[in-house]
Amino acid sequence: MSAAWTSTRGAENSCSLMSRFPDTDQHGSAILVKAHRSTESWPPMRWDMRDGLHEGSLSAIIPDGRVSEDVRMGVVAVEGISGNFPRHPNIKTHEMVPDDQIVGWCAACTCGWRGPRWSRVDTSRQAALSKRLAYLPSLGFAVPSVGVEEALHLEWEKHAFPAAAISELNAAVKAAEEAASRLDRGVASARRAGVSWALIGSALGISRQSAHEKWSP
Ligand SMILES: [Zn+2]
Image (cartoon, rainbow, N blue to C red; front, side):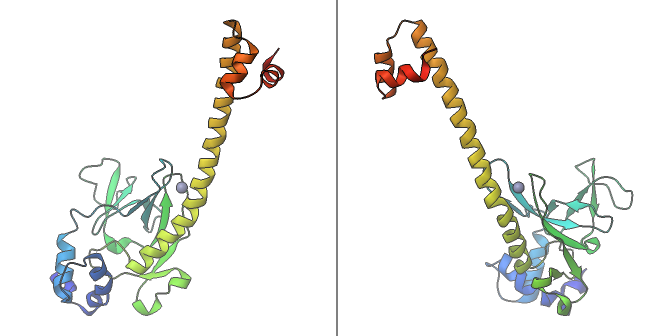
């Protein structure tokens, strides 16, 4: 592992690592070591609409097609037991997949949506954002470059913003229907209690005539 950290391929990825650790110094190897030490505490890559419906994640794809939505710096936890990988120490239903088994990435959302696949390529020369080709050296590091991460984030936003707006409209329609239903019940209750149409209209900010026309049986 120590040889890999000082390899040329490692240096190629130092730009993205520097962006992830802006407080580190500019010396490549020091940054790589710090990144490695941070793997235990790095949280999964997630983007939240805070609407309870759409929470996005940077997800990794492994050769058998399974997708992990729990991608951390050096850990990819994949649901399902194939027997090909070590069992997850804390989650019985998951396996731990080494970062060099990742064949691609996609953006995913808790609503079930998944973005297009980004394929992992073998060299940095083959990488191309426009073709969704991403390079990642095998350094115990499961997250692609910041540029790829930002592109995946944008793909999720293009899904999540319209979806959240539609969800909001659906919620507003439901709330309006509930309010109308409550009003009907309230007027009926007031009439049973002997309240006049004039008082009902006054309470609702409309004329006696309007209240009568709308709710009289
Ligand atoms: Zn969604």
